[in-house]
Image 1 (cartoon, rainbow, N blue to C red):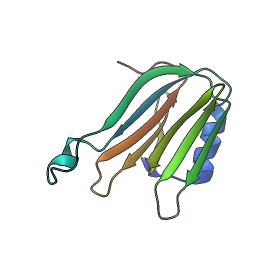
Image 2: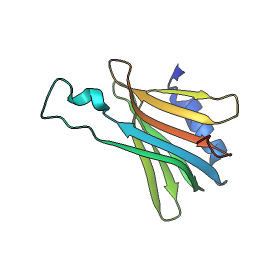
Image 3: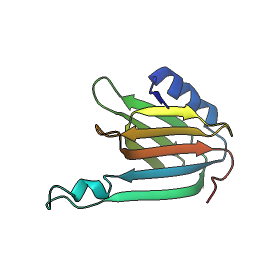
Image 4: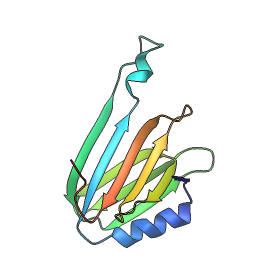
Length: 118
């Protein structure tokens, strides 16, 4: 994966807009978050093969902080914060991920025209 280039990611978001796509959304502080501090508990989200058509995709943030990507739907939004890397997979899926300072996965947003493997 490459570090996010805001303009390139925006172009890919635009390519998938206004067409039915499948989303994979994952956020986690991971089980590793609670290993050294009993005040921290594991929290996360996992959605796979959610079929949507988004009207607009937008990347914001960056500079010193990770990026945020929002997908505007007809009746709401899908929003993932903490993204740092991206790539286009061999099958054409657009993958974005956020890695914490130790390189561990913290967030993922993946967009594909075909369902993801279960």
